[in-house]
Image (cartoon, rainbow, N blue to C red; front, side):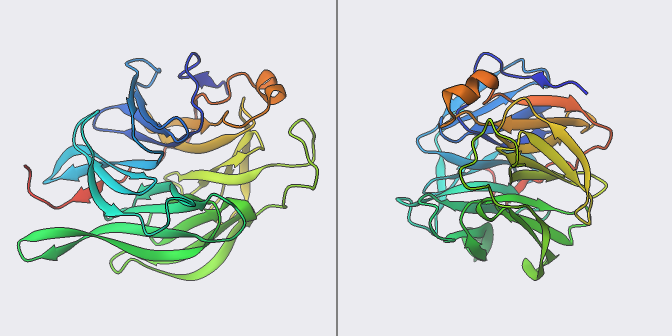
Amino acid sequence: MTWHILNPDSPNHLGESPFWHLDEQRLYWVDIAGRQVHRSALDGGAWQSWALPQEPGCIAPARQQGQSRGWVLALRDGFYRAFAWGAELELLAAAPHDPATTRFNDGKADPLGRFWAGGIYEPRTAPLAELVALSWQAKGTSFEPVVTHLQGGATVANGLAWSPDARTVYWTDTTRHLIRAWDWDAARNRMSHERVFAQWPAKPAGWQPSEPGYGGRPDGAAVDVQGNYWVAMYEGGRVLQLSPTGQVLRDIAVPALCPTMPCLGGPDLKTLFVTTARHGRSAAELQRFPNSGCVFSMRVDVPGLPVNFFMDPRPLA
C-alpha cells in the first residue's frame, strides 16, 4: 500500500474533520490553527481554500429542502451555516462553553441530520469538555436551532462515529487514551449503556517523539460498511482499523507522527484519507517527517459509509 500526498506544497497547521462530498466528488477538511476550510478533487487538483474568522473545529455538508446546500461549521464560539463557498456566515447558536478556555473540536452530522460537536478544554487540566448536538425545534410555522447536551467528562473530545446500523455511537477522550461506546436511540437521541470500546496506555513520563515505547493516543475516527472503526493515533504515526469488538485488524504506518482523522471517500468510498498536524511539533520531528500537516490517501478494500448531511428544515431563501 502506498500513500499519496494531496497537498505537498501547502501543508496545514492542524488538519482535521475530513469528509468526502459524494454530490460534488470532492474532499473537504479544515485547518483548525490556520483558520481555513479546504476542498479538492480526489487527486488534490482543483484546490480551494477559504479563510475563516475563528478556528473551525469541524464541518459537515448540509441539505435544505432536499437540495445539497452549503455547510454547517462549529467555530470557536458557536454553530454557523454557510450557503456558498466564501460567503458570509450565519450564526445559528452560540457555543454552550466559555470560548476563552474552550473551543469546538471533532464533530459530524448524525444519520438523522443533527450536527454533533465535542469540545476541547484548552488548559487540559480538567475534563470539562462536552458533547452537544445542534438540531431544530418547530415554532409555529418557523424553526429555531436548539443545542442539546449529550455527554461530558472529556478534556479533548474526538473519535465521534456511528455504527452502520445507527445503533451504536463512539466518542473519544484523547487525553485519557480512551474510546467509549454507547447504545443509541436515534429517534430520541439518547445514549445509554456506556462501555469501554478501546483503551491504550498513557504516554510514558519523559517520552520523546524520537523514542520507541509509545503507540499514540486516539484522535479522529471513521466507520466502514462492515462496522470497523478507523482511528488516527496522534503521536503514534499510524491509523488503526478496529473490529466492532475492538480488535486491531490493521495497523497502517502514516508518514507523519501526528495523524488527526481518517475518512473514507472517492467515487467508490474505498480511498482512505488522513489529515495530519505540524503545529507545535519540533524541528527535529519535522525534519524526520517533512510532510507533516499534509493530507494523505491510499486505496483500501472495504468502503466507508456516505457522509451524513446536516438537515436544515427552513424554506429556501
